[in-house]
Length: 199
Image 1 (cartoon, helix red, strand yellow):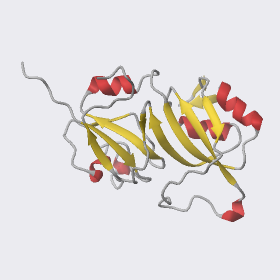
Image 2 (image 1 turned 30 degrees about the horizontal axis):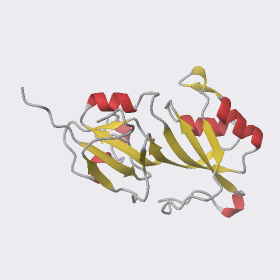
Image 3 (image 1 turned 30 degrees about the vertical axis):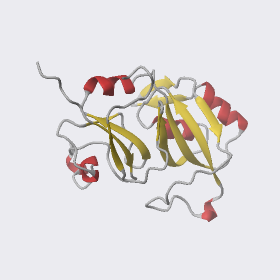
Image 4 (image 1 turned 180 degrees about the vertical axis):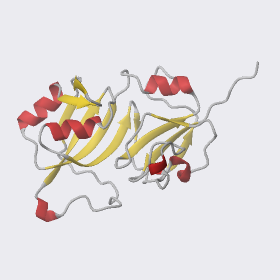
């Protein structure tokens, strides 16, 4: 039996793209898809998702077992998040200890996570749309690291503590970091080494 050769990709998903390759709803037929960023094999799937308005690190693979492992709670996902206002110590503590949300109509308390203020502002490229005018007051950046990934979870968490998300960029999945990748950049890799367990 011949060995299946899988392909893996690291991409910097730009703002305004869906984390999918085909349209599955009529109202989304004019949306930008991942296939516009490169020439991917037919079986390629996104490992997890970033919503249309979010940016940053997204991993692609043709190997379903790799996808399942990376989406598990064993692997950290870190986000740099610009929020409206300056979060209080109490808000940071709530983010760290667990936020009560309603996700798809079901009450849910998020798992404890890492949440800190970023002392040095990120140097991401200018977003494709203006995030916020100066007249709307200050904004600040947080680093939030999760081991779960509910629908729009980070946005719901920051809004729940009173500091809505203005911009969200995923910067790390396990040991794979976004680094200096430009928006829209695609890199094919031999394997997705999110930790030492994957060979």
